Length: 234
Image (cartoon, rainbow, N blue to C red; front, side, top):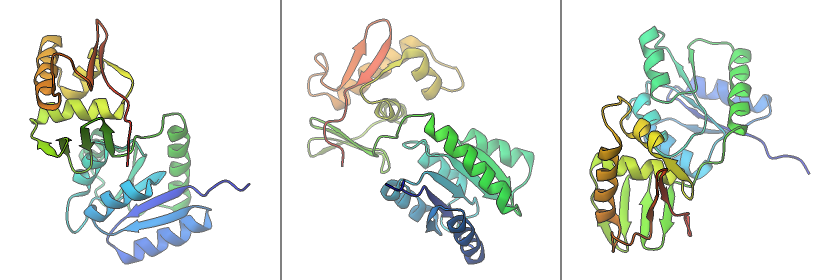
């Protein structure tokens, strides 16, 4: 049986670049999907689940760095930034936002293909992403829309409460250590385990019907926290 083609999503609003990359990537043996806006890219990333994303920063509806930030809230698919912004500060910002690589336009197709091969090798070493919709019992979390429901009631969360759930959803069913949560929620290091304990307590009171007997957000004593595995993703 022939293995399915790897899918590359090209995000760029310049028709000539889309045509060039589409033809070159198909010739190299990839399936290609295209998006000419940030919002379309986010929708296609969820529905098409591309293996690698080529992302231009100068999009008509939103900055590519904002697209990258949104993608990184729920997917670890490799992102290679393709941009005319060649300053070192631009590259550093792109990589800090979660890009796996950064190529300055113009670039050679062989160099791009080499970067894609590296990205694919890295992808094979990590686990598959969860679907952007998580559900366990009456708790439903949409990572793309940044919305949370208990039953039919939408729950309003603070940015920190949402950040906690986003990390736990990406690791659903696994214990996430206190150290990892502190590093991901407070990357500047300006917090501690007591602040995390309080945040978990507050979040439970938002998403649990009985916070003292949580069904969803569980404590693993002396280790960390775990969000129960999704039982119905769609």
